[in-house]
Length: 79
Length: 334
Image (cartoon, rainbow over all chains, first blue to last red; front, side, top):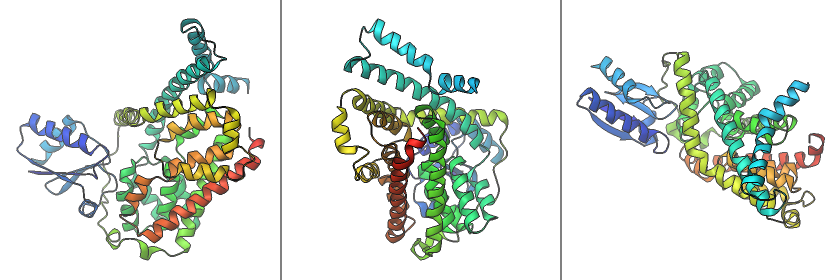
């Protein structure tokens, strides 16, 4: 599983990364977390508000920072 | 009417708090509120508490409302309109759409890729930081409702005019090419439940307080200093109503600064109490919030310098005009 965190670095992107790391630990999922900060790459996903969460190239959340257990729920449905 | 006046003075102006703090300063700190030290301590405590209470309540309520207007829905709504009405709607929606300033780039790209004219996007970008629902209510609390509403109206007019001018000047060629034609995510996230909205609003309050508490303290500190320590004649000499350059000075000092609008309000309040023109104080506030070096640097990534310069020029000119207008006609509203 490849999880990407889209965000330009300031708001909430760090929080999202922390929540995601906590989520995969809690769910016991093996995943690689990549932070994407370049706008040109972020725009390829078509979102308008950062931070955003992308799992295996699918956008699962944008414009908000889901808590770890919400992220766990999302990841479970994708397994 | 009487009920309204009571509500206004208790909820917005917090007379009860004012009296409570006076009691605290006079009886517990044993300071005379009429002299400099006592006066500034009173100003500081009262203003800090007032701003934080209002901030929390307002951000909560407004974020709840804003949860109904995510940028994706705004984009869909705006796509259906043309011409000036699109600019007007863009400016209005800019005030209610939540977004943190580092979303301004994806937002700009998202709007433009969906086919919205850049003028409409700029109307949105101008009104968003300028006309903040929460700060409008804070303005009403510190000054009065007439001024707050007038501020909203001029802010929106500035946004609409600015965006329309940018549209008419046909400046699309100055937008970086990669902005156009990007994939636009159509699927909206699932609708929020009431519980979701409450959580969102709560998170926004905590988030914003975490971001702005320092600015508020500094702003109130400066306000207290102005209020009690800097002599009136020094302030009139630099920023007095009669000085023709006061608006220009206030605008140009404000623009390169970045501070949250909540931090500028106590400064504006203290300045006006010291005889600075209302327009001058508003120009300072608008300069600080509408334009800032960080946001200009970010915008430069998506628009070329010429368009950025025009944008900054239009907004600056607008702020100066608004400042002079409020200085001249402000007495009608006080």
